Image (tube, rainbow, N blue to C red; front, side, top):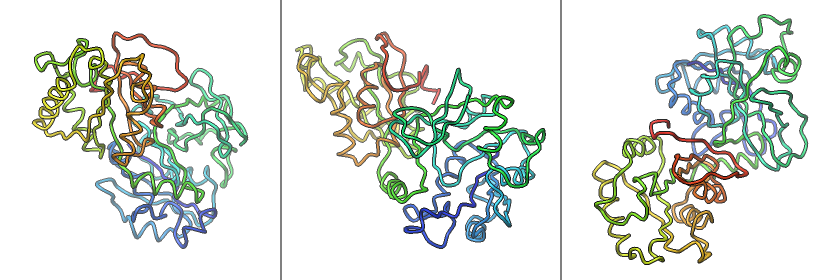
Length: 389
């Protein structure tokens, strides 16, 4: 796969905190912001990236050269500002594939590029947000973008996340000036002809264009990211109130699944309701004994679990730790210095996801189970098998 990254930003609104470098080169924990975007592309096996540069382009070119972690780096240079559309059109001359991703160089939006590519259509990655006025809302109907709204206060909706999937020849049928805006002069003008699809992602999103968000990403990335797992039904097969080692059967693929996320820099945290303790079906010591067995088996497979948080109460006890309340997640986030927005939660009940969502975790997956579904006011994905992610 190939990508064009728009890396020519002046960073006018960041001048109070970032000086003398292009905005994508703003320092984030002693690394240029742009490296975090490139790391995402490395993870998805991109083979070529074209950096569209302008303002202080030498800073970027000298830093990255022609290669980043095995990805070829090419440069499309602007001698004068061409607007987002003109900049992309010029960079298209360096694209080899039939289609290419376009990425804003001042935005980190974690999307599944492989799945976005599968749309096989002009597409924009869209992020669900609440209570926003900094971005214009994107109106979506049956997966197709109908229009882009002007910036205003919006209670809840989708925004343009600044990642596009376009054919290399997307501009060839249209009469366009040398300098034009991709959004205003192309997408909005030719929307009826383009049939733009929305690729929805609920993963981490931040635009460092203002000092407040530049400060936020420093804090977010200094924290850990966690993979939160429910126990029964996700780690082990749920036979109902499992407390004996003989009945504890690991879900096939769970070890490889966890190892994959550890390689990606996640810590593994288990959050589990254990009402059987309060119901007298087994003791706290029974649970802790089984817990030790489980942790030992993970260690034998090269996996260290950061911690296990459990609630021993019945639903009628109305405690703060039992899911769907977020108490256990909030404790883990505080104890382990976790950034919830960078984290993931997987459960086999909607109550698992409700608790995670209430704790600020946005990337949620549900493993199908015998438990009933119900309507919720947040989005999640179905994880049919552990091999899906």
